[in-house]
Amino acid sequence: MPSQPSIRIGTRGSRLALAQSGMMRDRIVTALGASLDRAEEVAPLVTIVTTGDRIQDRRLLEVGGKALFTKEIEEALLDGRIDAAVHSMKDVPAIQPEGLDIAAIPAREDPRDAFVSIHHASIADLPKGARLGTASLRRQAQALFVRPDLDVVMIRGNVDTRLAKLERGEADAILLAASGLNRMGLGAVPRGFLDPIAAPPAPGQGALAIQTRIEDRDAPWVKALRCETTTVAVAAERGALTALEGSCRTAMGAHALLDGRRLRLFVEALVPDGSRRFRREAEIDLGDDPRAEAHALGLKLGLEVRDEGGEALVLKD
Image (cartoon, rainbow, N blue to C red; front, side, top):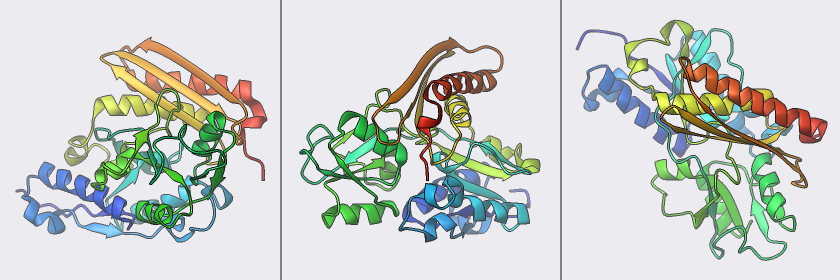
């Protein structure tokens, strides 16, 4: 293998983050032509505690939004302390810091929300007034839209923490990303899944984002991680994210389906209490610049939803 500096990979320290980063590290090591038994030498993981990890007693929207899961890692990238970062795409804000880029989006895992409960099979099966645990404004609003009688309780923390809270009876059910459960080897835990067309997940849910400095975005090991199908689908969803403010203060979801060159996109935003929903969907054939065209479609549908819903969509202090 040609001599080259190691690729230091920044990651959060949760079990899910380390599982995801470990998967990407193995692919980076392989792309560099090294054997996996040299992984720690060739592509060491650098654990970074983010503000979002430290604050566990409040919703992210109360303390600065989803950027709190990426801020310290991005600072390490800009300072040269790491060479790449692995994020859950749904945690990445719509606008990138100057000097950084989402350089690769690997093939996507299951994008759906998973319904997890000890005693109940689905949201419809929950008894009147049941406690549904989530810290996501989107999940809260989507659940209340179909079941306004539910008592939504704030449950934050990593996957293990949330499952432990469910076991202790702090909620009758919780909603989690199916992708995270699968990557942690917990794919048997869900009792069911939300239909991603009826209840679109967070933009980019199930996908990972490989973030680098601008000058490194086209390195051969970066290119080896890219999945064009996932990249185009995520571009559409994040177009809608850009239009709909892109913060934790808007209950919005987007889900893209790509079949060859045919793109279908579903976008919705809800009033935080779930009392009203604003929704658009469209289908187009992609041309010579599929990523730009997908993003433009997401932006168009997102703006239409925003214009219809107006200020009612944004959670007030």
